[in-house]
Image (cartoon, rainbow, N blue to C red):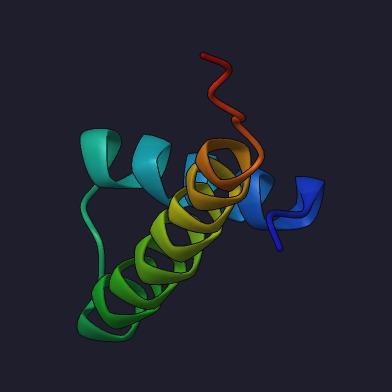
Length: 56
């Protein structure tokens, strides 16, 4: 599930990456958070597509 805290941390790491760079631990954390975020987005899309009903 995509929580506001998850999005906030992703944004923090993104800003830090653009300004001062990330340590190896932060790079790994960022990759892990991206995977969680993308899995949540894919789940939402799948749920939305599954709820579509075709009428003939």
